[in-house]
Image (cartoon, rainbow, N blue to C red):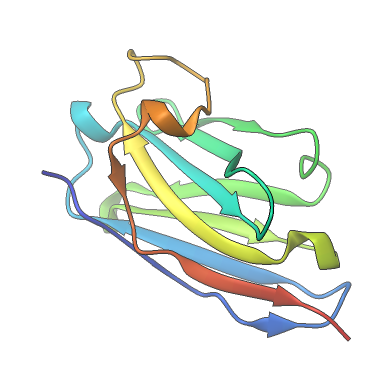
Length: 126
C-alpha cells in the first residue's frame, strides 16, 4: 500500500506563493498518477492538478492553470504543487492522492482514488 505525506501548507497573504510537497513511499504502476485535491468548507473536494510520472506530463484545472504548476522529483519520490498569486478562495486543505493512471487517465474524480495523504492546510487572507 502506497503511503503519501504532504507538507508545505501555511498562512499567506493574497498574492503570495507556496510550494506544497507530497512524498510517496513508492513510485510505481499503482501510483503513477499523482494528483492534488483541494477541500474547502462547504464545497466538494476539487481535483486541481495531476502528473503522470512516467512522462512528467501534467494536467491543471482551469481555476489554477495560470497560477499553479505541478512537477516531480522521481529520485525523491516527490510531487510538488507550486502555487503563485494565491487568492482567498485557494484556502483549504490540500490533499495528495494517487492511483494507476490507466484507471481513469486524467480524470480527477475523488471517488476514483483510494490512496490519500493526511492533507496540509493553506490559508490565504489579509
